[in-house]
Image 1 (cartoon, rainbow, N blue to C red):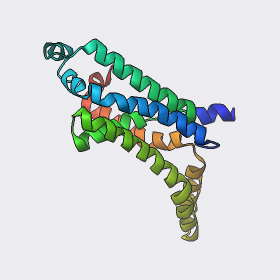
Image 2 (cartoon, rainbow, N blue to C red):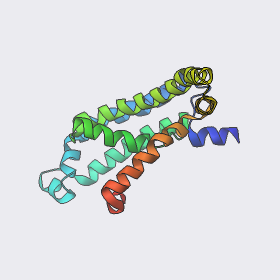
Image 3 (tube, one colour):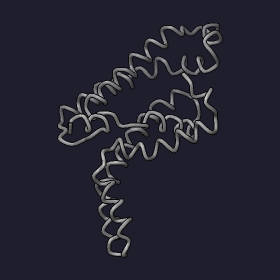
Image 4 (cartoon, helix red, strand yellow):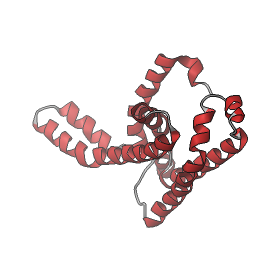
Length: 181
């Protein structure tokens, strides 16, 4: 049951250099594909018919992008388990910050996702124990208990605390129809 919970909410416990290599191999292949599809993805944003009229091959683009995304996702999930909402929150926020051009957006979203996961782990294992001790010393036992609980949570549970409100915001702002695939 411990392995199921670790995979369901993600974990970085007991990982080795081999696991890092597996993730980087999947990420490397996906990052290599960006220069070959970035312009075509920008064209696809206007619709498949318009992209085809401008010389893009939508079927090829979809196949290449799907293969790259599937490989990178499979490698990372195989190593760390499911870390929820990173793929929802990070691309939207990155697009708001850097714009819609995929040549910049895709590598920066990759870095931003890795940074978010790193910040979550640092927050859990470095900041939360310090804040918990500070809260306990300041006679705030409920706050101290809450931060001690965050320290024991899996990374996916912490990212869910960030991602669920963001998803609700997107749902309320853009409506249900926009979020349907």
